[in-house]
Length: 67
Image (cartoon, rainbow, N blue to C red):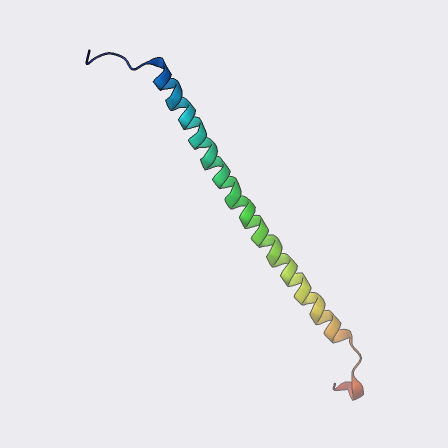
């Protein structure tokens, strides 16, 4: 029978596979968002630490105003 419809199970399997693919794509997108936020947070912390180091250097007492 060349015009026979595929079994119902095949449609169900294909739908299940599409669901898993959509899940994987969504999770990948969420991972990229999380990695971006991590990089942003690391950058913020690095800038804050550098600002703090500079403030400590400026606040140290100097000998004869030079050192």
